[in-house]
Image (tube, rainbow, N blue to C red):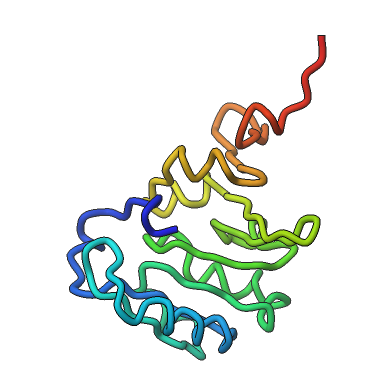
Length: 158
């Protein structure tokens, strides 16, 4: 997802692109293998396992694993308004403060996006990513309407 997200320039001054993983050792192991020789955003990638969510504050992306799903409402406010992409896979992931949330739909992994939460954190998410999302949530000052990621998700009626 890093290719489809823009962080503030000050955050991107860091020498390494850091992905913090909280409570998902298998995800951290997979990321270690996948990122061993890759760069993200023109920087070497680093995976950090964090046991205290506050240690993820200096990361670019933080993934909160399923073992902490019941704690999201207390964990994610500790990261609120920081310029980091919060990724979850919990039923209440977006409502708790996540920005990308994985969902299993018809045996396929899909994702939903909380665009409003990402924008408040200073992140910009590409329209290309939003177009393939299962659901995009955007609450603006004028309404509390949810928008669909693509016109194919919306129901048409005459």
